[in-house]
Image 1: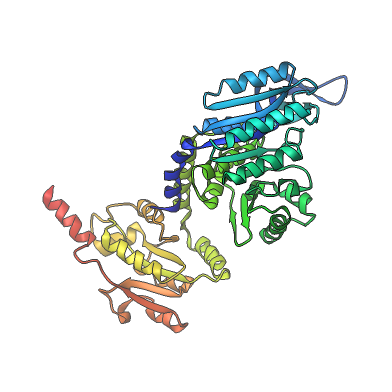
Image 2 (image 1 turned 60 degrees about the horizontal axis):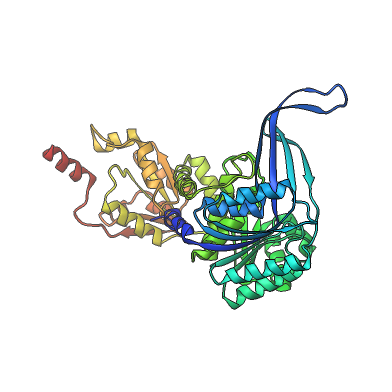
Length: 488
């Protein structure tokens, strides 16, 4: 089973999670239409409105994502005594897996973000809000309700949009309560001083927020690691998950760092992607997954939702489908031309990887092939497989061969976790391929001797190694085909 298949098998566990989410809820409105002309009154576009949409935003979007994943959630927040606050309350009430405690603060104005969109492009965002800490009674009630729920939740999410709900006292009281119950606390932070989140488990800033909080330049992965480790030390947290937009994510702890490439295949709207990251990462931790697996799923989730319009959510089925789809794309990406393969191999060598090579027709994959590939992979860091073209197989094996086309054979090999590259060749032997690739290890079956392995002299001339792999007895494509013909 491949790494992505193993991860896909863990996705359903997220629906078993129960979380506590506290933060700034808001109302996201989208006014969508088209622009055909410019106003005669001023040099501005005229938006002809087609549709208006409203959905939960901020911490509310985190909760929407949790509900979409099938996770249950206790949601504690504050709204104003206004139409937007009542609309938010009604929307949250429609989520069957959410236990909501939306406290009303009469002095507060419920945040509304109004986005005007034409042809998929945002023209303008207009915000209505009041950044106001809750009064003493509301704050005490919020803390009380949240503390009561921590014992029933497996993780705590703090969604901070700097609108006043998460005061210093609220943050510290909840982090301390969670630590006493041994519950992980994941924070989507705001502001410049992240020390206010001291004691949390993981912070999830974006690249800009990390730079502002540390005062350090953020460019490549190395600089992100340095800044994240400073933040870990200063804020007293276990790890930092840095979202890096088109560059993916970085999960950094004091001991190690993992840099995940972006999973997005297309970007329609980045609104709310950070909420999805918080929800998926938190739900995965609550379900018992490791931080690295949680980060991988959060990275995948963000890649799915940015391909949708608005503050979108995703489902477990979408995550599993995306994992399998990407696995197919990865398999296809392993089948390269020689020039493309040489470019990738140069990169591997720059990283210090040992390159292995084996070859064959691989017409009907059988245990003998699997044994050869498995043994070859133990001798190197990256394994390149040379694959005979259809014409080459026909010349070597006779009429009726190959049974499967070169594209099919390459796709099957590409699905194998132990195979890193598949390169086709039209000649009867892979000698030109070996001369171009210059593998560190050349592997063939033990039915050969070193003297009659094609390319052995080339590999040995520059100090490379030739390995004769043990064969799995009783397996042959030709014999398999004969048996099938007799039984037909």
